[in-house]
Image 1 (tube, rainbow, N blue to C red):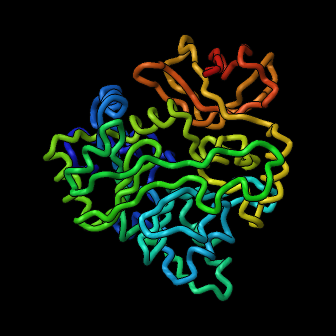
Image 2: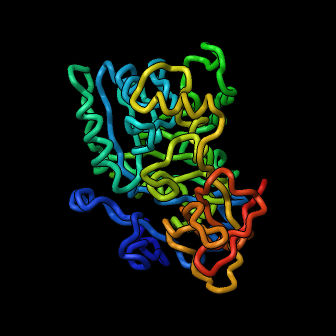
Image 3: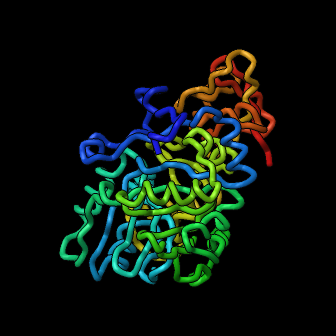
Length: 370
């Protein structure tokens, strides 16, 4: 999609952007993605009110075939996967021994292979962890980024647009309610805490419905045909800037941007979609259970409204958030939203009140209490 008229590549705007394919993937033929196609705010409105096609083919793809893949992934990640069936998707985390978030992946199961898609730049680390944890399990994880590409139909009309590719009736995401502290054993059903409907695409690959729309995991060789069919049916393209603005407004955190090395799942609202609280032992589980039972993680994810008076440039990820001159958190993703103006996701100390007068550099920031 980077060859579509008007496309402006991410790296042309920011050479240091994390939204570039891994160098190893570039060497294998994976290309960059568009930040926008000439009108970022219009592209945002399209994703917010209708549907647009976003190129996210820079994400890393890991294939996990093998007869023991579900039970094995169940033991080495945060999610309940032992009962994962063909046609189901979910999310998972890899945690440190102390419960800090190291990796996040979206999941799609096709009956023969479990497919994981993860952040650009994170593939090598996730694959290294999975390979290290194989031992004698009958699984064969591999980097499949050169084989498969991820595109996303984003917006309220995403499932209707999917009909162009011959798939209809994708069920809405199904997430188990997060139980309260000190819940009884068996209160959380023995299934993935979030289930996303996955269907095969006639052209090859799979469609997975998620929180923001429908992800298309397609053979990289078929990517051009998929894009042509959707555009031919009137689906407009939208850049990564538009996607990020919609994600921020929906308060969907991005691991590695809206997290730091100390972040635990409860701080950034990833318990619900990516952690099963009653599945038994996995790396980092003790911290997850202890924090949940205490009921008060030390920090929280918030949406900040920035005044935009001193500068029209959103702050960089990692910029400190201060209160009365003291750092109380950091900025994650900051964007210019077509309706909300300058907004940002930030992780701040839990005891900071919703009406606190926060600062990001010289920019005033207010917490959205909704």
